[in-house]
Length: 106
Image 1 (cartoon, rainbow, N blue to C red):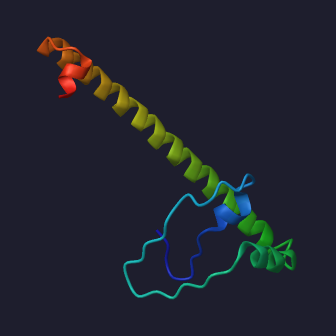
Image 2 (image 1 turned 180 degrees about the horizontal axis):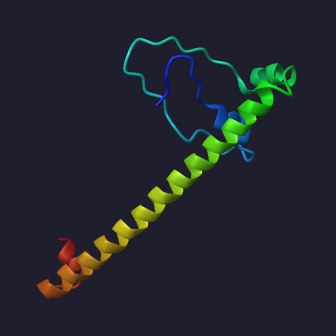
Image 3 (image 1 turned 30 degrees about the vertical axis):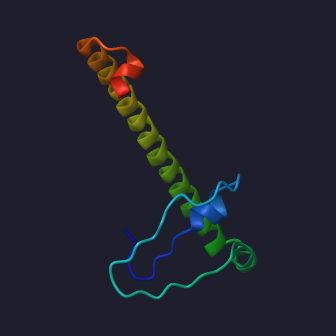
């Protein structure tokens, strides 16, 4: 959750070495003012602050990126487990019904 003065999108711009694209969506629950800066412009600005803000923003972006990747990997793993359970249940239902795969789908 972000609060007044927060920023987001940094992990996509500063930590995504392979430019895989966005990994999230921002949703607001109250009136907000959103400022947009392009990747190119942000990198130009940060060049002027290499030892201060730039370093801090890169560190935070990397932490967020790794956290996002771990969360995505966890969801993928959960999805695989659910898929395996569904397939197992489907096969069990076919066995119990005495029907073959395509007959059961009808």
